[in-house]
Image (cartoon, rainbow, N blue to C red; front, side, top):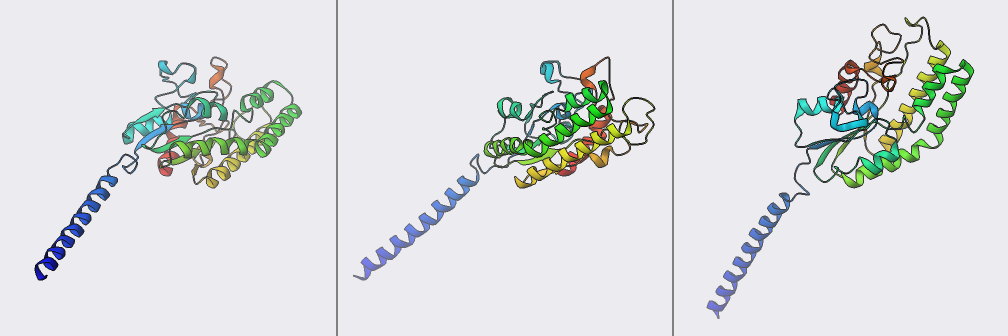
Length: 273
């Protein structure tokens, strides 16, 4: 009887030890599964402010998307060497374009995402065209139409994009970049738009930023405000990091220069990332 009890005790001990070791091994194995490995890939989404329109040095393979090697995503990736870098931002992109054509690279290994979007949804290009070509009252009226869209419709479209990013890249830290104010009021410009028009455009940019920041925060994302870094470098400042009307390359009008990408956007993104 004593021998049987001893054998049972030894068997129980070995079983417990084996279970403990097996459990430890399973836990270690779980820690090494792809879902728990560090997510360190970087994916850059968005519109022309992220693709780098206006900065030059465009990648010919990007075609009309005009992705620049001087855009803040490319500059950040070159400086920080993420495990992977996918640059899908595209000139002219709206929220629907991001959803339908830019999210492919997102996955479990994505640790960082950058994004700027919303300006094209709000009719940014049409606003600027209207203000350049038509009267002050027509300009202000068009700006007010854009403001109404930003208030009533854009938040829902941003929610769709942000939710899709979270679903496809649950481990990612997402940084949403805003837009600069375009004009220094009372600055060096002696022709072109009136200060009333310039103030209306700046105010609309502020509304777009505050709306975007609120939606980003509600999704747990970080908002990168570039208005501070661009202060003193607006159009009419005498040291602009933004193109004014560029008649030789109209698509670059009102977009950051290479200095605007490296001095205006890159520091904000680097700090937020």
